[in-house]
Image 1 (cartoon, one colour):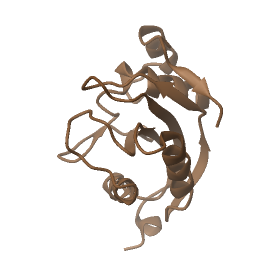
Image 2: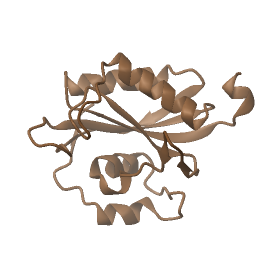
Image 3: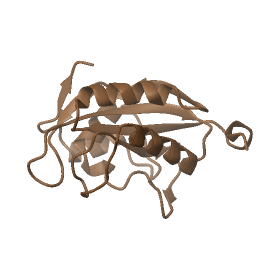
Length: 168
C-alpha cells in the first residue's frame, strides 16, 4: 500500500541523540538520512546541543537535536523507518537509558495522542528533558501540545541548566 494514498501529510517532531562513536557526526548523518526517507520531507531542524547524560553514571555527554518532518507515513510506519536508521548506526539496546550511537524518538505526531504497545506520543519523557524542549522551542516557540498546554509553559518548568547549543 502506498502511504501517500491512505494517509494525509502530518507534521512530526523527531528527537535525535547520540553519545558514542563521534556523536556530532552521528546526529548530522541521521539528519541527512531523515531527509531521504520515503514519504517524508525534512522541513527544518534545530541546532545541535550538548547535554549531560541521563541514566547510568559514567556515560559521555550527548549531542541532541530536534527535526521537523512532514510525513505521509502512519505513526508505526514512521517508527519502523526510524528504527531502521538506528540499526544502520549499529544501535544496541543493552541498558535502559544507556549510551548509544543513535536514538531517534517520535516526540509529536501532529496533534495526535498515541498509546500503543510500541509507541507513546507525545513522547513519555519529553516534558522532563531540557535537551528535547529547548531544541523544539528553537523550531516552534509558540507550539501547543495535544493537551493544549504551551511549550513555553513547559520551558519554565524545565530550565536550560547545563544544556549548551553548539555549532552545527
